[in-house]
Amino acid sequence: MKKTFADKVIQFNNHLIFSEKLPADFKVLNPFQDNAETMQVMQAFYKKFYNDSLERKFIIGINPSRHGAGVTGVPFTDTKRLENVCGIKMQSAYTHEISSVFMYDMIYEFGGVHSFYKNFYINSPFPLAIIRKANNGNWLNANYYDDEKLFKAVKDFMIQSLKTHIGFGLNTNEAYILGKKNASFIHVLNKEAKLFKKLITLEHPRFIQQYKSKEKKLYINKYISVLGNSCAENL
Image 1 (cartoon, rainbow, N blue to C red):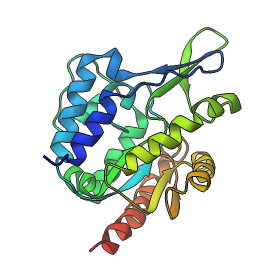
Image 2 (tube, rainbow, N blue to C red):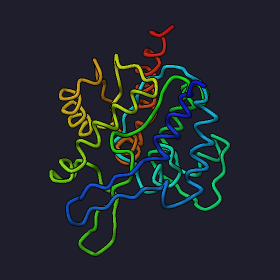
Image 3 (tube, one colour):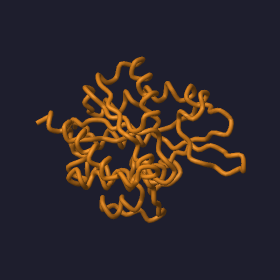
């Protein structure tokens, strides 16, 4: 029996392990191993929106935050939007993540979750949350590019992850990168591994929510224009 897009994503997440050594004070969080319900709601999400064999275009994030996909297992989706927009309730956690707010406001303007997820797949080249120990001993969200040694430690894993994502059924003519600094690193990986013909950069939702909130509508319109044109080209 042919595997659906959902089957492939779920299988990937089921076997998602990062065991390489990281620089001191960095740690990886794997929500699929840390919380059994994360696996359940992740599977419900993909079965609901990706249970087909449609080709989609790739939206590439950085790496999950502890309060978004680091809990739900679904990129740019906190528990509030997972329940209120996607109709999937998580009992063991309740999170609010600002990137998720922007993403789902944009998805609403795009035409809603069913329309959006039929056309796009979102994930990250490093699909697990990374945290860093601060000077005061607290653990904070970190990005894969925050430290040169960290990037070197995860680089090969990221390339293999991108190749696996493409194998789910992604269009390689173009992909969309969230965040300008993220884009500079993805361009390096793309040049080395020759994954996508064209890369298009969009401002990261967290940047927009934190620093450009008064112009949020303009950024939503930009997303809709860029992504909507992509869908029109496929008609």
